[in-house]
Length: 133
Image (cartoon, rainbow, N blue to C red):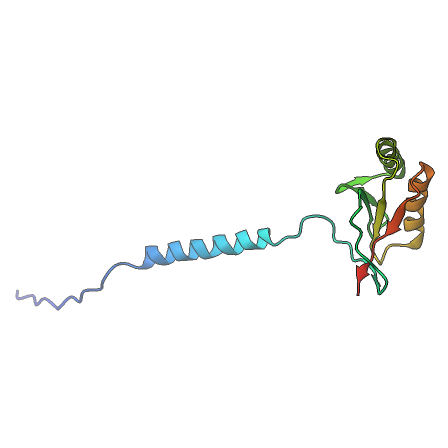
């Protein structure tokens, strides 16, 4: 028996493991940057106004989302909790300025309810936040 050997070509390094590593890195960075770009806080779309001006003396921000839920410091609160929080802060600082940030899709009655809770404990220095046009 006479077996003939065929020429074997030098195939070079095995790149299958390199492709696995590159694919893993690609997936890792896609997931990492997707999570990183997620905004922190609530998504409240403010109404636009031409006469809006920046307020540097904001001490408390009360957010009203489109479903009518109140938020203080990023936490949902009830109307009574909002009143007690603002009342406690007013005892410490009577010149407290309260900004109410309401989503433009929020019902008017929810905004008025937030204002009533703030005024009910003596908070008369307040303003409504708008997005400058």
